[in-house]
Amino acid sequence: MQFHINKFIFISTIQFHNSKTYTHLNKKVKAIVLNKGSHTRLIQYLNNQKTNIEILQKKEKKLVKNIRQIRYVWLETSVYTKITFARSLWTIVNNKKPIKELKITIPIGHLLIKNKADINKTMYEIYFCYCKDLEKKLRLRGEIWGRKYMISQKNNISILIQEFFSPSIMFFN
Figure 1 (spheres, one colour):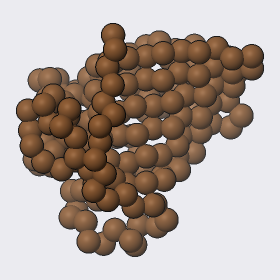
Figure 2 (cartoon, rainbow, N blue to C red):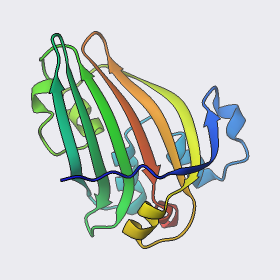
Figure 3 (spheres, one colour):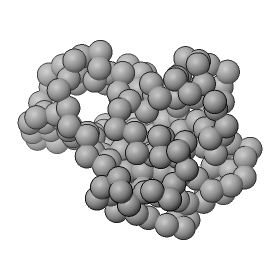
Figure 4 (cartoon, rainbow, N blue to C red):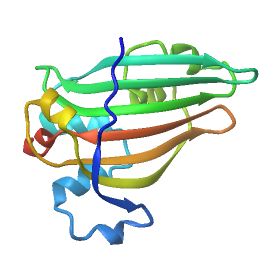
């Protein structure tokens, strides 16, 4: 399946240095965008429903000493409300656990938690943007918040992730 959402119009991109820069954001936006824990668990907490993953596209390229994977997914509630569009670039240095389980259609955070992986999460950017393709898919109009960060596991795996949050995530209590 060919699926690309690449027509984001960035209204503002903020480099992530420390959370003091973001005092002007409302509490719900802060909780979602600055969350350093599992985004999937945050969605479950906000809407009190199981979170599903819909894989839109996944490509794998094996290089001499490592594997690269690109994955495009939607995180959605159990009633199929699309909450987050995420694209990730995986660089896998060796083929140890949790690597063999990457083909499972579960969110990255769940995979790492399930395998008790010791990881480091580094935030890079926060976005305020607009995307006609997402508006059409979500059937919602409005600005989109997003973020870019890296998850790494010592000498084994690094995952660069971009997440774009549906405006509907702001309506959960």
